[in-house]
Amino acid sequence: MKRMHPMKREQVNKMVNAALKVSLRDGCLLLLAAGHAMRASELAGVRTSDINLKDRRIFIRRKKGSISTSEALLPSEVEVISKWLAEKSEHILLFPSNKLNDDRQQNELSPVQIYRIFRYYAELSGVPDISRAPHAFRHSLAQHCADNKMDIKTLQILMGHKDINSTAQYYSRTQAEVDAEKARLLA
Image (cartoon, rainbow, N blue to C red; front, top):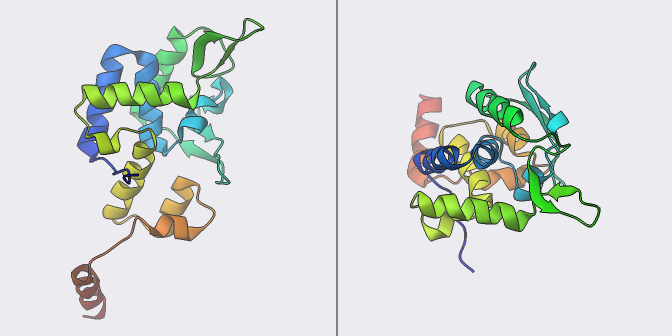
């Protein structure tokens, strides 16, 4: 199996913008995935009550043993979420599925449905096949933050990692970078 590659920020933004032109729900879903390193299963479980527009925060129930967090929403996220909340039908979930269960209730989107949404916009935006998975947004955000010198402990909190070794994978450096940083600090 090939290893999934993070996307460049421009690719992520192109996907989000493409989705916003087609579907407010899909655009909102991708915007939150891109900005909060959310897994498909975490996106599926976001409740409307997890959004606090007054305080500009979102509560994220992390999966896979990660630490749940309440994170700040960016102004662009508040704008899109506000529009989506005004448009969507009333439901406990932020992104309910259109499919009804046996009780005629809407269920959460499945990870497969989220994968299809993601793949559709990735293809539409010309994202390489090796990055056409929802988890690519998670890795893309982490790699972008690490490449731009975010402190490892800060990134650990952003990603919800319990073990810092999970975060450390984004901090690979060349020997030339190590030598230059050492020289700068010891000068």
